[in-house]
Length: 371
Image (cartoon, rainbow, N blue to C red; front, side, top):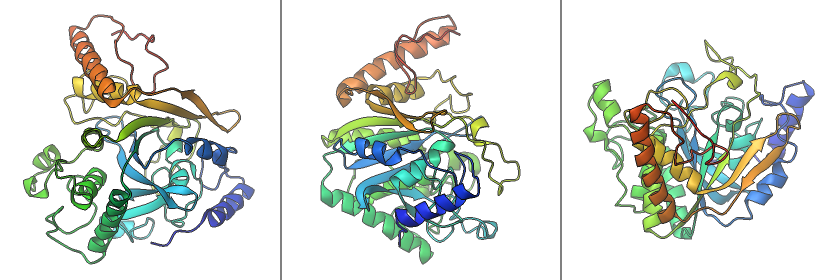
């Protein structure tokens, strides 16, 4: 896949800015200190970054999962992201990118870009500029062998090859290879690259052969982004890789509405939901998770937290609003499990209490919450 450099992308940004595009919109100016903050974040040693995007719907928000591999783009990491519109639906061909199932995007463009190296059909808030639409949790992994990074990237290219030739009955999918929200989604493509490309035979990826044509059965066996993320964290810990989290917070002021959507909503008005783990709380409203699975995930990500990055709404600059030394994974997981167990029980009693655990995105553990 040919990547357009940042110079070309910058030219598009300048052209859009000249036309008066607002900050937080396609063609608008990116954060003024983007390069400076990017360099600061790259000082930390890591090899991969799993990018877990928040959900933007009121109920049942699963979010999105993508993987950044370090130094595979000029001066940046390269994000591999399953293309929601590569489903062979003819109505998508006119307005969206449909040429590849796995898109490759420079990471800073994926997070903060206001112009896309993929071309004018790229989707703002999905293929680039994610942070203007929703928060992103980045799980950075260090100690990954170079051969493993190459194997994962090669497998993403192989998935694209399978998509182009309309392959069927591959080891990772028993139907035609194309995007499918339930059967071949973002979580499954990431999981397949590690299981079959990097040899993670201990990583469970829900098999397509378990799925039936009935939507309820298919949903029950679908791969869920945050659930896959939790599996990968455990697999990386088992391999003695280091883990830490960066929270890229949503910019809350974007008034952009996608004109390609019939009932478009301004990005600032979309929910910014923690991407739910499959659980009985899957359809609860934002901030109302009370079950063990979701609490454990939110507490674990907080305990592994290294940096938190925010777009200052007044200065339009990025700020590192929290940096700390993260817990080691065993301690982070142990504390998350203990706190999630106790807090979920207390929520069940419907009495006011101060939670023991801290959810990622919260200021500190002293924040109280009552029911």
